Every structure is written in C-alpha cells, then in structure tokens.
Image 1 (cartoon, rainbow, N blue to C red):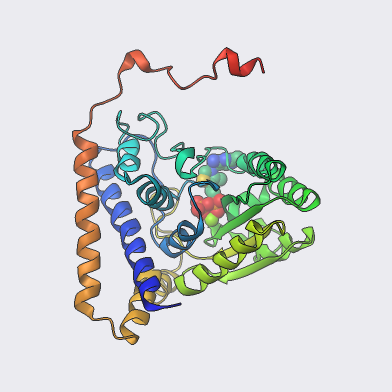
Image 2: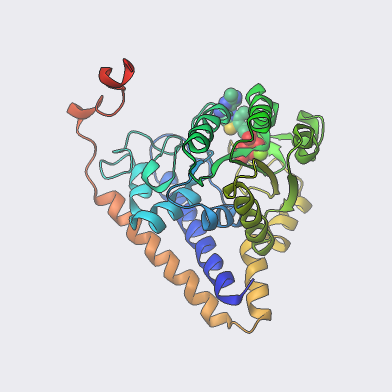
Length: 325
Ligand SMILES: Cc1ncc(C[n+]2csc(CCOP(=O)(O)OP(=O)(O)O)c2C)c(N)n1
Ligand SMILES: [Mg+2]
C-alpha cells in the first residue's frame, strides 16, 4: 500500500474514533436517546470496508457501525453530520431522527440499515444481491455481522443460498471475541468462524482486522472478485471492542492491555506511517482535524430541531400502491 492511501485510512480511522468518543461523551450527558454500542477499537475494519464500497453497492451495518455509516455518508453525499443528527434523534438525521443507532439507513449512499434483530439481514442481503445479479449490475451486497450472529440459523441459510445461487455477497464477520460476554469459542463449534464458513464451498479468509493495511488489501481483493461476477466471499476480521454490550469490564486485564496498547489499529497505523517518514506532528494534526470536524457535527446535531410529532408515521409504513404490487 502506498503512503497516501495509508494516510487516508489513518484519517478515516480518526474520523471514526472521534465520532464514537464524541458520541459516547454526549450519550453519558444524556443528549443521545436510546442504546449505544460503539465501534471503538474496530476502526480498521470499518475504514477498510468503507474504502471499497461504492454508493451503488449495498451494505448492511451492524450495531457497532456508526463509523462506516458516517464515512459512507460523508464520502458519497458530503453530509456525514446527518448520521450524527440521526443518533441524536433529530429531524435533520438520515431517517429524520426515527432510526437512531440501530436503524440508521440511507440507500442512496449504499447504507441499507441495521436491524436490532441480529442476523435478520442475512436474508435481506440475498435479495439485494439476487436483484443485482438478475439486472447484470456489478454490485456488491455486504453484510457486516458480529461473531454472535454465527449462532443464528439465518447465518447458515444465507451462506448456503449465496453459494448455490452464486450471489455477489461479501460477508464481513467482525470477530471481536465475544457476544455480550460469551467467548466466541464457547458459543460456537469453532473459535475460528472461518472454519465453519468454509463448509459452504466459496472463498473464505481470516485476517487481522486491526491491521488496516492487511484489511484494506484483503477487502479490496474480495470486492474485486465479487464485482467481477465470481460469486460470494467470506472474511473473518479478527478485532476487539473497547466497549461491551453492557457497562463494566469482564475481560482479563492482560487482554485489555494487549488490545488497547499493543494492538490498537490507530497506533499500529501510526507506527507504520512514522516508519515511512511521516512526522508525529502531521499525525497529531490529522487527529486534531478529525476531532474538530466531529465537534462541528455534534454542534449541528444539537442545534437541529426535534422531529415534528405530526410526521411520526411518515415514511414508516409502505404505501398501499407498493404493497399491492
Ligand atoms: C436475534 C437477537 N438475539 C439477541 C439479541 C441481543 N443482543 C444484542 S447485541 C448481542 C451480542 C452480539 O454479539 P456479536 O454479534 O458478537 O456483536 P458484538 O456486540 O460483539 O459486536 C445480542 C445477543 C439481538 N439483538 N438479536
Ligand atoms: Mg462479538
């Protein structure tokens, strides 16, 4: 990977971290309604995926994907602040404040939305992929799922269907070691999800999801393969999340230290950039610039109006003219 590309990914990862840290602060102050699961610690996975997905592609984010949602919104529509506003439940949000953290969607930038029922979009992604295949569009439909989803029936149904219909699906399984507090090896037949996926017969790889260089290259190769009409691909991106599903730390101290201090995706990318001659001052400048950008998005969200109660049901139900078709 050339240095400008790595520098760009470093910026993207800082955008995500600043977004999540700003959001976490506002959540603790009671300014963000609903529940919040951050993607802190998983920035490389999201930056790598966002780098390769175009506005015409379709991705289904999971509950820790504010980062990829914001990057896609910013890159393809120039208004990333609307993801922040959505999380604040404001009328200027991408779903007019009705989606929040778990249901932010904007298909115009490729964001087909999360669903609070883990695994549900493992079925939906097949429909998007089948439509693209029937229309002959060089489109990638990407499902971003946690390791916990592997225990759902939809996971296996989806991989099976994608395999037999040879659909353009990218499965990005974000294995952060736990589902709630259950270690992945205790909840599934294998701690290496890729071993289970391989049974469906298409290309499956496991990679270090915190190494943004590796993640970017392997996601790029998988996307190119799918876009060229060669069928599905499965990536298990091994990473670690700073925040659990509930408050409190349940993981051993040494594990926390390793992931936060030695294997943090941003620190790893900073080391690599410095080894290539990029100065510490420049790296600090990137962080400061991203933090300033995000504070602007938070100000925008706070200053935005609340949704109009009279429009509570607008855009929620499908119109009868569509339902009858
Ligand atoms: C079908 C279903 N079962 C249970 C839940 C409750 N739940 C919310 S997050 C979560 C854990 C998900 O673990 P994982 O997929 O590994 O994601 P992580 O939080 O580790 O990123 C569960 C069980 C849910 N949302 N949907
Ligand atoms: Mg998990």
